[in-house]
Amino acid sequence: MTDAEYMGLALQLAKKGCGWVNPNPMVGAVIVKNGEIIGQGYHQKYGGTHAERNALADCKVSPTGATIYVTLEPCCHYGKTPPCTEAILESSIHRVVIGSSDPNPLVSGKGVGIMRSRGIEVTEDVLKDECDALNKSFFYYIQHGLPFVTMKSAMTMDGKIATRTGKSQWITGDTARRRVHEDRHRYSAVMVGVGTVLADDPLLTCRLENGKNPLRVVCDTKLKTPPGSRLVTSTDIANTVIATAVTEYEKHRPYLEAGCNIVVVPEKNGHIDLNCLMKNLVEMKIDSILLEGGGTLNWSALLSGIVNKVQVYVAPKLFGGNGKTPVMGIGVDCPDAAFRLSKPVITLLGEDILLESEVVECLQVS
Image 1 (tube, helix red, strand yellow):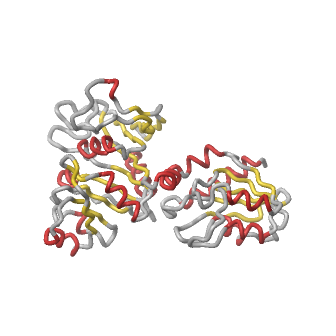
Image 2 (cartoon, rainbow, N blue to C red):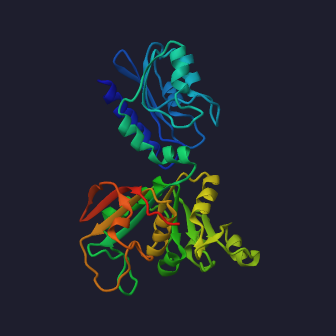
Image 3 (cartoon, one colour):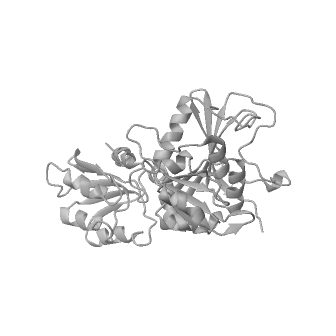
């Protein structure tokens, strides 16, 4: 097998940590000696042993003289676990093949430098694009100190997210909705506005078997979330944060008594300051957010510049009339002022289509 093929196996291992390692990266490792795989492992849980050490522990024979394939540059600093470079040096591994460089300034290039200085052969950038894509949220979180935000919506082919009566369940089919639950497992948090809470009373949990529930964040400037809503009464199964500009403790009390966390955020242009909220969420180690809000919150999120990626599920249906659209607000004045997105990646999900684009240019708002 080639270096790329062994790295491909390491990538598949890394994906097993999806949803469980945030805000750490997903990492997989494969150890090969004399053309045979003698050990493999992946980072399984935040705070747990890293992929390299798990792969070494899995070895049935001595790794002396072997090659280790790892999807991300081995760490060289003490965090919740000891440095992986230290374990590699102690194992007498002869060669290290790396997919992505680690953007963390505590690691970037330093792990490679340590290993080379000790006589280990290092090959970099094998399946780099695939390895980088695996940890896009982690890279953004480390480089910018902000969560990676994906704005998700489901609409009909005439651009409606609800009928004229406000009903929206269900626009897409089972396959598309399963994909949404996979993303709820993958992302650290899911965020909605109070309008969505009032209209749909959502639970916002992951319905996958053995899935992980995300932190649920409600943007509620005036604190209108009903104390009897499912997001408030289900904190025993998933944590809920309510972000509000209301400062009075007595108004917070019913939510706090129900187990919710209240985050007081300054008001900006009639709504909570989303940029300030992002900084609060980073302090909670939230590295990624699935924004499942309505058109009003989506517009505010775009104007604030917090949106990194857009997901649009399109169903082969037509609602017509005055139904709501994914992005409301005042809108742009002319086509040249549009938010620019990258060429979409298109995925067929049953009868529905998923379009995914990166935000490449934001509207300049003073």
